Length: 219
Image (cartoon, rainbow, N blue to C red; front, side, top):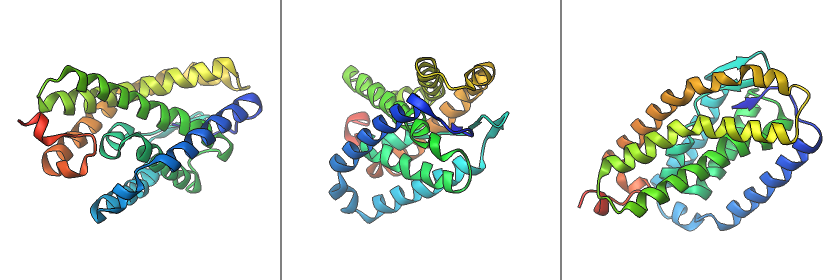
């Protein structure tokens, strides 16, 4: 989700400060050596930036020129690359989508927090909970994390956005609130897309999925 109108005041500074902190931490601690050690993982990461940037820019629809809804695909991104590389990939993809005119530059840090960072953190937490069950079932990974994680992504975006808007209300808060139910239309499609992509990668190219343990789930 991209905001079409600029942010000002405390919400702009708060989202900018938190985004900068998370971005610096992720960039400093990301497993760059592991990413650069295999050409195919590098190509997959760069390709994800390009594809997501274009998808976020040209797919979806604008709601009263206030915010733009589009497929997120952050769940599968997190499962393939891990949390830190996923949020960095999302940051570059968001930058590309903004260059293509998908939203307001001033709202970029806020969009990255709510659309990328929070859903990626939710996916990683869900993955941790599933791993604690020690159930050796491929469908628990592909559906329990891939599908359910994607299903929860729009809810995560909606709840985090409304919470921040409630704490630091922008002048168009009421217009957003009146139309925000539309994001719920993305719950099942987002779950289906992420579940399908997670299943395909886990079966066809498990070596490219960082969080997937082929030996454990198929033992």
